[in-house]
Amino acid sequence: MSVFKLPDLGEGLPDAEIVEWHIKVGDKVEVDQPMVSMETAKAVVDVPVPTAGIVVKLYGEPGDVIDTGSPLVEFSIDGESSTASETSDEVDTPAKLRAEAEQVLMDLDKDSDETPKAKEAIGTVVGQMESSDNVVDSMTDFGGKKAAPAVRALAKKLGVDLSTVEATGAGGVIRPSDVKSAAANPAKTATPKSAPKAEPTVEKTATPAKAPPAVQAVTQQSAPAKSKVVADGEWQQVKGSRRTMARVMQNAHANVVPTTIMDDADINNWQVGEDITARLIRSLVVAAEAEPTLNAWFDGDKLSRRLISHVDIGIAVDTEDGLFVPTMRNCDALTPQDIRNEMNTIKQQVKTRSIPPEAMKDYTIMLSNFGVYAGRYATPVITPPCVSIIAAGKLRHEVVPVLGGMEAHRIIPLSLTFDHRAVTGGEAARFLAAMIKDLAKSR
Image 1 (tube, rainbow, N blue to C red):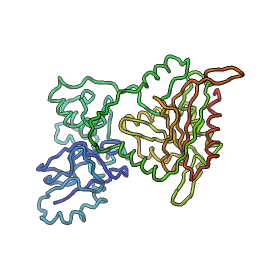
Image 2 (cartoon, one colour):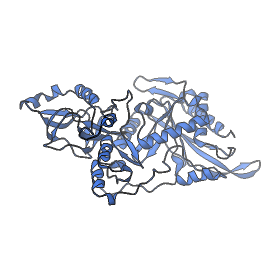
Image 3 (spheres, rainbow, N blue to C red):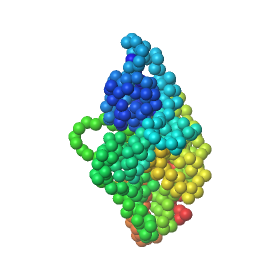
Image 4 (cartoon, rainbow, N blue to C red):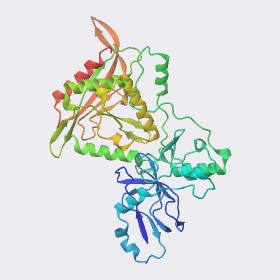
């Protein structure tokens, strides 16, 4: 017997969720054929069969979470003694399994009658594509639904348009069984739908007064959609991206001493159609120059801090699958148009789950815009080693005294949470004041 253990799927995560088995107990399998689709925090990864033999046992069902290094599949190999399982830990070390998995190319079309064009099809291995030097995400979006490479290959063989398939997997994942059902019942396939026009990302805020029609249209699209979550009263294991979010928040709670201060920024002098995200990011850069202690990292074990000269902002993006925090690099060198281009890229990457792992770490300060729907002030959570996070609430109109009279001005509420081990109250107040002063400018 030989026991295959779940390898590190290339993201440094401690576990992964079983999405779909492509084999069953009793199957005679060959090296490289599709074995199982596993969902990590960012993508669905297809794990190929590592060794030829007969499937003896599957350690888990779809929906189960398997720890990295834990048994996944047990095989019976021809000519192997019955005592082989006793030494399987020695033979199938995690390092060996990872190396084997990263070298295996899945050829899902090897049984087809296609000519050389079939050789051009790119197969999937764990974490890397053989035809490229770059690590890629195996998830592909089809009209707001997601499909792994094995599912896409199956759809190609059966002549099924994935945009018409009803996805039954968690988070809109199309399972192989969905494709087979669509092929067997073409009349019951779903009507193709376009991707959602708006995602609940951080840059969406209320529209300034007198905004042009184009801006008003965008704001109308950002109205909260009805949740797809069904409350059935049952305990459910937290999985995928939400599981990663839970770990990060738990770690933050255990390792940060947070304090929050709040204030309002008067933005009545802004030009019509001003890009709110660009202005918030510019004000963060200005504030970091005025008070560098908040654009820093802190090591609680060594009681040391690192003040950072460049500004890399971790931008919180809310999705149905949990919170993502991609990084916008070198914001101190970006123009407003650069920022808008970067935001568009971030939104697309979050939507398609194509964010490179390295793009979701090493930010020096954090920004959240929870006010797209509701809420004035908050106590946002800092992710170590950062020492601060700024949150923008819902834009509103408020009556303010002006030259002995009263006027209605547009106001953005701001909440600044800082790690009080690394930042003093005075430093945080000066940082927030610098933001408010910059946001008050007309340009």
